[in-house]
Image 1 (cartoon, one colour):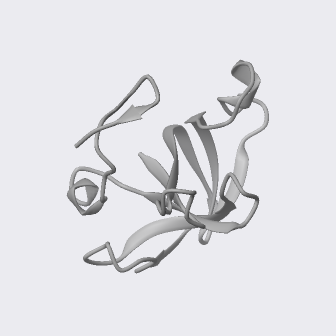
Image 2 (cartoon, rainbow, N blue to C red):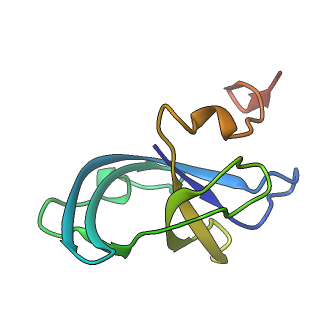
Length: 112
């Protein structure tokens, strides 16, 4: 899973966007092509997935990008929904518990 860590929204949450990697292709060095299924942007299917013929080229680096994370994770540069610079951070079964959550979300209502 890929989550976007950027500027806080009106409630103070900096975790803003979720994506699932569909495919990853190593190009060389720290550069990879990614195909993602994404949520968080209004629009049709073209807004929510990377077209097969148009992968997203990214440079993936390791680092500790926020205090909530216990250790280093892999990430690439992106933007948040406000258009501000953000980190797109990879999580897997070893790091997912480090991701702070904002409770369940159903029909625009949040709970704990």
